Length: 444
Image (tube, rainbow, N blue to C red; front, top):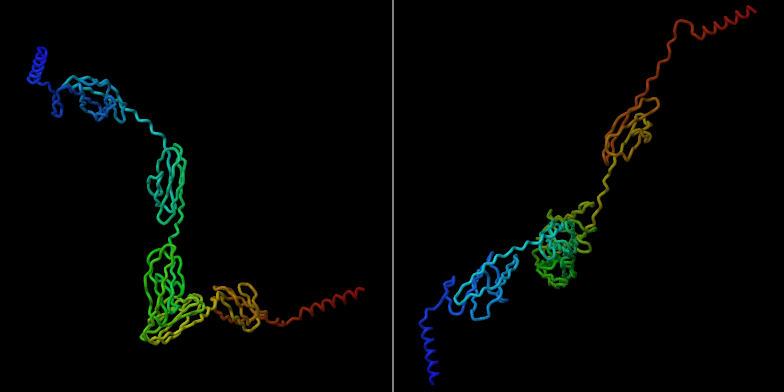
């Protein structure tokens, strides 16, 4: 009983001492107060912002205050680490209750490894201006040079409307590898139009271009929206829009409405086809093979129809158009005569029969026709026995005959010798001969 009372008295005394004793406290940098059985390890570093691990537990980045319980197992080590620096491990201090122990750690910077020597890709394309990617990364548009590490690299070249191009290239250190991409045009997406009409035989125009007559199928149309126009003499023009889809055929069946009697039409065909059509001087279109070209919506009256085709003579005809009527015209075009490229001469002489030389070549006796002379200036000479040569130049034009008339001049005849008063030379010679004979005879 006495022992129990003694224990109670001691306990009460301890409590009174704890309640009246002044408390030990530490004020941290943030103004926070700690005390009791907690101590502080304050870690700082150069540079700051290093990661702190205390016995394998992450505590934050420097500067940092680490709370430790003085009654717990004492801390062992602190690891300070930061990217680009060598990590450092230090022994952890053991602060007492309410105590702050500081640690300052200076980290050593790592030396970056020397960059490896690199190579280059010199990239061009046809057409130029294409987008270039190397190993999936955009590097610019052709022509372009880009630096790469040694090794294999994939080059991709793309251009709108062309097929994508790619190839792998091996690049060595210090090497410049030329790359040239020849891009192939991408086939545009196409579709089809199947068009019929009642009545049939209407001219078909797609986007303003003639594509045949109904019924017909129009192929290789670009995907998207188009306009269709059907024309048939005596019927109103049928116009609509339609869409073409990739690989599909769009079907249109048109019921044409007869035109009223207020206007008429001209249906034109020519042999050969391909002639330009003019009505009163206004261009209307081109004649088609195996089909009439329909000119519709003409007011009643007279019109001048002309067809023109290179290498053929113009065809003209007057056409009378009546309300509600169709005037059919079938024209056969006549080829133009071949243009002449040479000329000729019509040569005459007085008197006739003179030899004719053109550019020193004998071409016959006058009168003569000298054909196949090139356009330009030519020399002409006429010769005849007993007459002086007649010489001149003449201008020749293609497709024309130039006339030439030469009046020959006789060569003058020398006059006969005139008799003199003395004896003729022959008589004197004969007498001398007779005298010589007489003298010789006398000597004998």
